Length: 109
Image 1 (cartoon, rainbow, N blue to C red):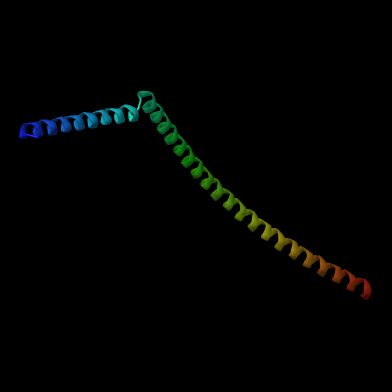
Image 2 (cartoon, helix red, strand yellow):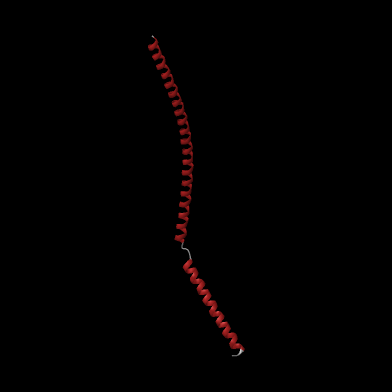
């Protein structure tokens, strides 16, 4: 094989390799290209996700505020209950003292 034939064969092989690479690249981009509808759908889904996250954050904030209110209300109710129980205990003790006094007056009188 002469030098010219070798250079020509090498050039043809390189050209064929270049054409195959270009065609493979074209096919790859053809099948992996994102359609405009898909981009619009992704944008819409992204917006919906953002809105859902905002709604979630608002719900969490509301629940935290509501929990704080209920905790405060529970503390107040427990304090009122303790005061009522103390008052009831004092009233029972006073009633016992009155019964004992009445019994002592009946017995002595």
